[in-house]
Amino acid sequence: MFRKIGWILLVGALLSVAGELLSLKLPTLRWSFEVSREMDWLNWGSGDRPFLWFGWLSVFVSIACGILLLFKFPRDFQFTPITQRRIDRFRSIKRGHRAFVIVGFLALIASFDHLLVGNEPLLMKYDGKFYSPALQRFYERDANGDDVIFKGKHFGLSGDEAEAAPNYRRLKKTFKEEQDGNWLVMPLVPYAPTQDTVTVPTMELETREDGLLYRPGAGDPYSGLAAKIYDLDDPGRMHLRYRFREGLKDGAADGWDKTNNRVYGAEYSKGELISESWSGEGDVKAFLTTNSTPLNIIFYAPSPPSLTMGHLLGTTPQGYDVLAYLFGGLQVNFKASLFFIPAIYLIGISVGLLMGFFGGVFDLLVQRLIEVFSNIPFLFVIIIVSSSVPVQIKEKSGLGVILLILIIFSWMGMTYLMRTAALKEKARDYVAASRIIGCSTPRIIFKHILPNAVAILVTLVPFSVSGLVMGLTSLDYLGFGLPPKYATWGTLLKEGLSNLSSPWLVSSAFLCLVSLLILVTFIGEAVREAFDPKKFTYYK
Image (cartoon, rainbow, N blue to C red; front, side, top):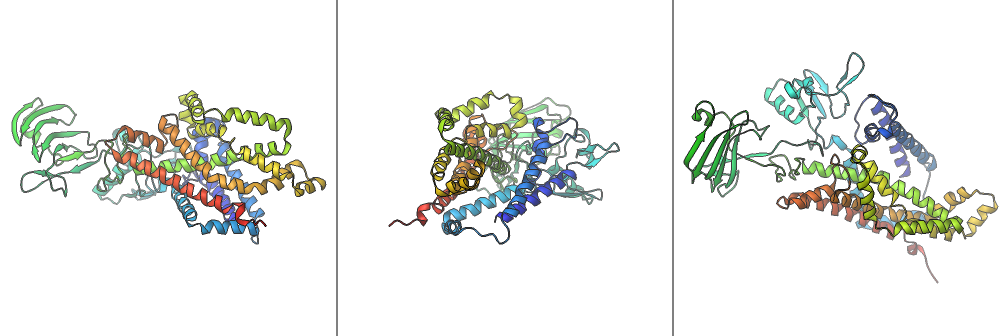
């Protein structure tokens, strides 16, 4: 298993380097370079091509860890009998093992990144040439050698759309209508988690033989607003809007010209025209018969779930696709865990072992310091520190700032356990033997004492992950967490409780959050039971 992890780290690092050198946006592997590119303090230099030291440092660490695992665990490596029995015990606990497989599958799905959920095509053909905006960072290099990003003008768009990023969903529809050999393939969910406001969904209504208006497949006549639209790609430009009651026009009606000026007004009662007004140019009859769509329902954000409209879980108040937003939130949780867990364990383990091994004044001072910080309400401190960070820094650094704040106040809990383990282990004979043969203090601590405390560390990891997920969700729900450019489940919960008339928001976020926490808890319980020393101890 460890050799497989080593190969994954090594191959992943090499692919990340290749992607950066070839200007490719490889899923997940691009993340360290993208973060280094977005945050000024994680790169050196200025201009279009600064030195991304954080990205290259991440690659170096991945390669070093991969090589270390490959040399540390050769092909003939075997776990000790006790460790193997613990692993077998974990596999025998079906609930925990199945939860581990599910979480691993979710991590694999999240690693596909923008190849699975994104608003850029995986592959497209235009004017006989093939492109992959989802994987290519740049469209081409100009005569000066500068990088040119994808713009609408590269695919035949004009006007304001020419200098903006293309709307590939609309471009796909245009290619299909023109039928000139151009095509593109979008990801499975063709929406980005954030910063991608979708076109307002619409549903065409039907007039049946009885002369009444119905929803498709509905048994009762329609009651509510319905509108004729100039262009379905821009539902905000309505032509005519009517109120219906039990399938008949009833109430006020309005009309707008193509420049979005209100020029028509009318009043209906049970399908009969009572009065009308006209302030536009030309004949009112010509206006009413202007070419526009049939009557549609316009679902303004947040819109309800609908398979026909392409939004399985509806949209958020900002107009984002909920399914894509949930996927983005899952990615944020996994990315945060990859940095948060190693950081707090590195600090907590080191401090705890040093406290237990050296004792004395050092142990006393550090204990008092930890007790002071531990007695301060954790969430309140995080809120105060987070709110004091300037908005510009939080917008720029995003996840890094929040993780740094959480790491500063999250490492202290495990120091007591590691201190106790160090106090117990340093009194054993093997530590005394190590001292006699001349082992250095760092070697005794990290080579002899630490491996005997692994059981404690392994059992804590799942619960640390669940604590991180709850911490991020709480901060985002209270408004002190990540900036809006990140998709977070806490923000979706907040929006759902603010829009109780849209129950799909809060229900989807709640189910995802609770499901992930339950899975992680099942894993933690199984690991704790599998590594319980009493399972392999017999007393006379």
